[in-house]
Length: 75
Image 1: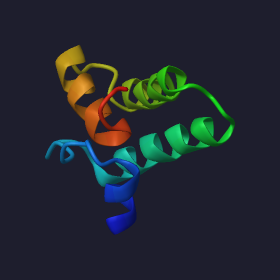
Image 2: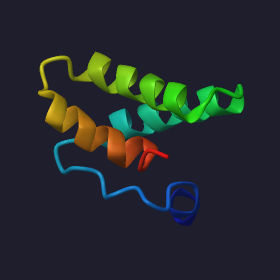
Image 3: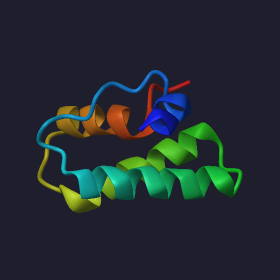
């Protein structure tokens, strides 16, 4: 958990409705994109795509909330 705080210092807590598995999957996808040298904007898009794939019926405000928790604040 401490490592998560170091990697995402500005990330708000995960919303209560967001499952742990989805959060981990989104963070892993983002980390993989970042490891390939993708810019921050593309990393956030990868994370958002995972969240939308797991929860396609959610309104974009809820996806944005989950995105902030999974990828941290935008640069």
